[in-house]
Amino acid sequence: MGIKRILSLVTVTMLVASSVVGCGSKGGDAAKGDKVKVDIFQFKVEAKDALEKAAGVYEEKNPNVDINIETVGGGNDYGAALRSKFQSGQEPTIFNIGGPQDVKDWEGKIEDLSDQPWVKDAFDGTLGSVTNDKGMFGMPFNQEGYGFIYNKEVFKKAGIDPATITSYDALDKAVKTLDSKKDELGLEAVFAVPGKEKWVTGLHLLNTALANEFESGKQAYEAKKLDFKYNKELKELLDLQTTYAYKPDGKVPSINSVDYAMQIEQKYSTGKVAMVQMGNWAYGGIEGVNKDIATNSGILSMPIKGVKEDSVPVGVPMYWSINKDKSSAEKDAAKDFLNWLYTSDEGKKMIINDFKFIPAFKGYESDELKPKDPLSADILNYANKGKTMPWVFMGYPSGWGELVVGSDIQKYIDGSMTWENLVKNAQKTWAEERK
View 1: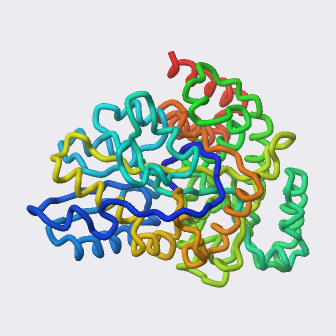
View 2: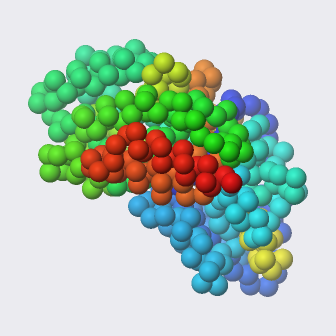
View 3: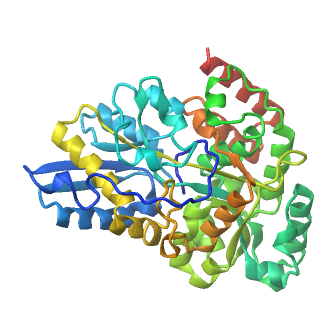
């Protein structure tokens, strides 16, 4: 899900030829020495099984290293859980941070990774949000993109060519066509909107408007005020979804009870809705329910009317960081594991085949290392055509996207807040946080 927590700010670069070889890439320096435990506290639910598999393989090569993984994501607030973890004294060795705000918030705990062998192979733009004059503090998880995941078979039956949906007006027309043919298409609704998930609305949906206001997450981080130039266009995009969304009790407020699992697994993956706002990370969940629908899925743009209508937001969802207060042995083992995972031949195959990641590093140019699922392929296609917009939401004030705007969107959906007041509160709270 990216998230679930996310994100950052990146211009996607085409994969270019380069071989990645680094210290520790075959099990390296951690293969010998005293027993050492590495605790990983990570956010990506979709990567949980693959990460545990990778840790197991690494442990076989390095019997003195014990890797313990804890995953907090999905419907849970990773940032709050991470703070709680540190406050309890159970500090992990490896954990996740987002953009410049997280670098500032965690500056007393994060290790400078500037000297790591993978740094030279990170794509241009992927390290800027975790770099300042004191160092570079994060290893990119991967690259991800999101938009409207759609069911190709349903579109075909409805007589809709997805290639023509490159504007808000075209999307609006397609949505109304799908709605008019719901019965014959076997749909309960056109969309499933996870109103319960404030990260979907307060981070990802909001980003489509603010990525047209700010050039990068770093610029958003440095901005003292929010103009919210395209709030009316954002409202239009949200209203289109909620008007034609699945409603558990038939009424709009009940959209706020729909969570990620219901959206992806219960509705989209069973063919009961034609579209969902989500990213390429959802492929594994869809495939786990229905392989046919998974292989017949694609991604459409999320158009902000009159601005950038044919592009998708693409960025680095999170970064791996290392707790600088851990022992040298723990930190060395943590660095070795991450380097092995992303740069060894064995690790790279797992990154593609098990994690199903779009890499943020050079060295994945061979055919066997190119992403194979159609959602990732679509994201790369948008990137190769230059039809992307940055992830600026990790430049938001801490917690602001979810706790303020995400919460207010829930109130807007249930009718207890007007859009005008939502906009005013967003501007007011942004300015207060930036003082």
